[in-house]
Image 1 (cartoon, protein in one colour):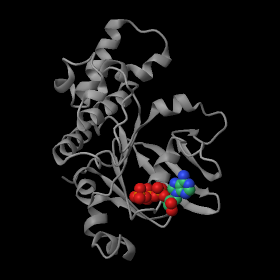
Image 2: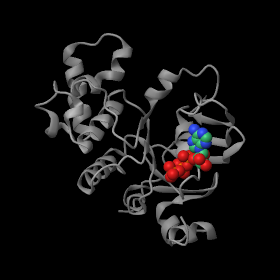
Image 3: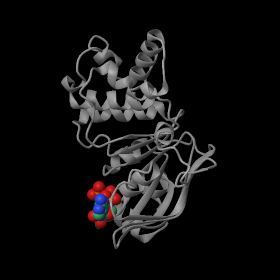
Length: 258
Ligand SMILES: Nc1ncnc2c1ncn2[C@@H]1O[C@H](COP(=O)(O)OP(=O)(O)OP(=O)(O)O)[C@@H](O)[C@H]1O
């Protein structure tokens, strides 16, 4: 399912991004840019810095004691690492979906509107509309439409993950970060989420860490190969998988290590 829908506007760009956990340099000067309407997959062996990079984009590493970050990440014209950045606003625009579904112990409905509560009053009708729209976009409406007032924790793992995606969509992000969003799920649930992400891609920019090469090749437009804190190669997914420029990429793709 390679796609040719490349070339939207640039929405995110990292410049010479270094990140240290104490003495350990986990990111060694990452320069990369992502465009509107693309899905980018981040691949590479365990410990190469994929999740660290993903978490840097919405400043989730800042709270970790001993972390030092240099360089910058621009979201449009805004330097994400500027002290003026409002993290609540940033995380609305750049939402995140984690490996383990993490619904709150509330009803499905309350989960979806969670992020909107911070935005002041909205009418019940408006909220109902947003809940339905978000759950439909996350391809879980039919599963939960009769259970909106039931606990989200009572859903299956795959349904929970899709409700978590609806929660992110409800605040109308521009960028969605996904950290191995299907790795804790069975193949059927994973397939539903893959299809759903593919359907959503025109509207959002998505950056997804995955260990699943088939998944990267099925749904991503671009693929970034990380190795030992370096970005080795970033290109159209078809090039990375069929015609990589760097030897390390070829060795990884062909299973020589990793
Ligand atoms: N909170 C932390 N404190 C110290 N070191 C960390 C921390 N998080 C990650 N690291 C180290 O930074 C490096 C990069 O880790 P990261 O989790 O980003 O890799 P990854 O490519 O996402 O790995 P995986 O595919 O296994 O999830 C690893 O050496 C890891 O041990």
